[in-house]
Amino acid sequence: MRFGQVAQTMMSNSASATPASRKITHILLSCSNQVVGPVYSPARPQVYLIPPMKPRASLSPIRALLAVAMLGLLSACGTRPPSMTTSSATAPVVRACPPAQACPACQACPGGVPAAVLPPPAPADPLQRIDWSELPGWGEDDHARAWPALRESCNAIARQPQWQATCEAARALGDAPTAALVRRFLEAHLEPWAIVNPDGTREGLITGYYEPLIRGSRTRSERYPWPVHGVPSDMLTVDFGNLYPDLKNLRLRGRIVGNKVVPYWTRADIERMQDRAPAPTLLWASDPIDLFFLQVQGSGRVELPDGTKVRIGYADQNGHPYQSIGRWLVAQGELPIEKASMEGIKTWAHANPQRLSEMLNTNPSYVFFRELPARGGGPIGALGVPLTDERSIAVDPRTVPLGAPVYLSTTWPLSDRPLQRLMFAQDTGGAIKGAVRADFFWGFGSEAGVQAGRMRQQGQLWVLLPRSSRP
Image 1 (spheres, rainbow, N blue to C red):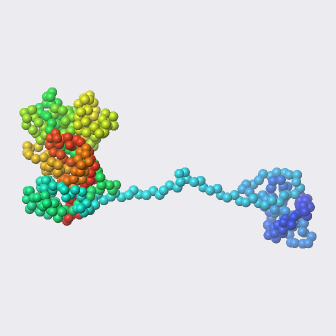
Image 2 (tube, helix red, strand yellow):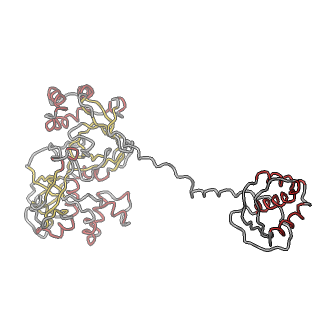
Image 3 (tube, one colour):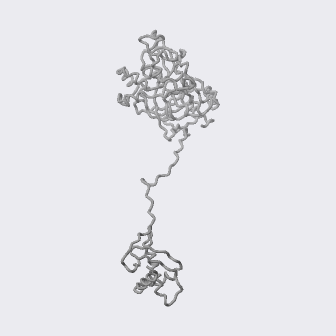
């Protein structure tokens, strides 16, 4: 179609335009000053717009042509070019442009907006200062009965600067001061500090131990087939405290294979080797379960066939972590948890001899002993002094300094009756790990063993430190 025909068609339709379209035509013509290319619109003929011309009275139809063409251009607005179609209509239909599509909103995160990731809270201070009046039962304890244990601790720690003045003052009080005098002495020289777990709680597990008596011999026989080993000659010990003071309580054990240091033999390995193990045999025991619990206690006495008694004590350990055989029996469904005591375990072991090795070897830890000279008093603890019945405890030395007085508040075994008294941190143990954690030494013999085997209580601990040395 040539321009003259287009113009004629458009002019013929402009005469019938409504007043509104005429107004739009006027506005568009007054603003247009560009050449616009071909416009494609559905149901409309192809239209070419021409440049505006200088207004004349005889050109009003052309203005109408331009107005209608511009309206056709606007009606083609959209998000994509429409397809070109042919229509039988002789004039384009004027329509308003559709509103622009809004940008779609972002999808919400599933589960809502995640909370900000915060760093874990700092662990609580392991020691917190308190007043003497906050110690439960402090005034009811017979402090004089703890005096021998205090004197034993001073034999080991008196040379430490923070304890020197306190131990000198203790020596000046003599061997047997009254309970009231001991209490005044403690309150004058020491301060109580609550021991706190990393999570801020103040309660922990309190268990018991004792010095057992087992039967044995210095020679192997059918009656005494189980070796009591001393420290192996091939076991290496790496003490990190010599290089890193913060790791003074960390020691690793191993053995050399080629040019490497590997973990030392497990309990299962040592039991399999028997007397072929690279460790001296001190004695031979009559019962493997009694020997096992002797290792758990860490020290004990062995009654020989002639009636004499030999005292043996902890010398070292193979470096493997302690695993509870009582917990294993509960997990296996062999014992209910309330019967997983030393007595209950011994009863199960004697009733199931075919599974004895399986049970014992679930604990890879193995204790080596040394023979101690015959003497009175309790066994020698990790502090290097004799333990005092019901006044010595084993602790984790990473929190509680060995030798320090510790006030204990717990309950008697299988009871709610309070057990609150002054104790002394004079021993350690492979299973005694954590801030509020202690092992109560009950003494020697079967009755002490009964109490120790039953004790699994919750309790609190306070360490008493010299006023001159704050942690």
